[in-house]
Image 1 (cartoon, rainbow, N blue to C red):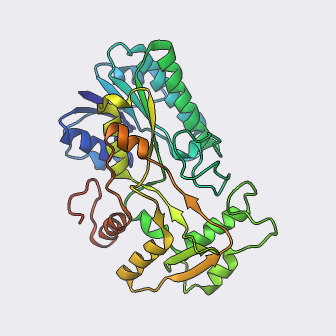
Image 2: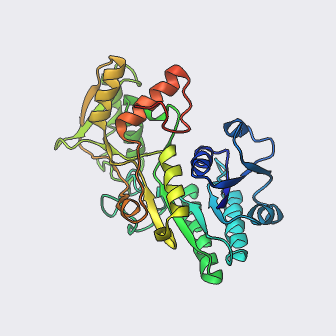
Length: 339
């Protein structure tokens, strides 16, 4: 197939392009004019279309002549109106080409639920595709509206589509900061300022002060459990695995008109992560017990069973990759060189 990747130079897009080429697809990628991330695509055999995805004529030209569209483009920051225009135009133009497009794959977010519990308590855990959608913040609301633009185009034109919902994309060395004293203190502080969330304490207790006071510094690994001994858990997504699920969504027949959660193979426990970080750094983790439980999870059983999603980004692999990035200049476009 010839596949358009909207947002080809992005964190997910640049990895997606490589996986599509490995599977012998032709790729056309949209990029911003003078895109500062264009170096991520250097040397790749793809057709680049530079322009503005809020311009319908540009979107029309980009979609014309391709067999499928994978939409990963998103302007980071307070860009709600622009992102809505991009999502609206891509859905509309793909709808006009519905007769010959294999499908449109829309990259949404687990924030449509949301699944982290720190802003609003989850209806249940683990969070699957049937979970109620109650987005918090303009970014997550925008993703839910983008899903609805996609579905509306499908209803009106017969467009075939798939929706993929990644859970907190990670690349580079970002994962190394997620299991530290600073990260735990930040979650506790945000939780105490969010009465609807799972970390809120109605008596006003500010737990993060004690955690920070006991630590060597904010970068110390943190092994945190609740008072019943349950470990805190976190289930992010390696950008390479998101790209893999997007490939599954565009290739697999079972993906048509379906939505899929995209997360790590299983939730990561803070004690296990802190132990690995301690092993790699020789810095002993801070052991913490708190009266609240953090459970950020994202059930991907549907993608595994229906469209052959096989994520590789387990906890140790993601940490070891991040250390290669930080210490040896490794670029984590693929899994090559990772044990």
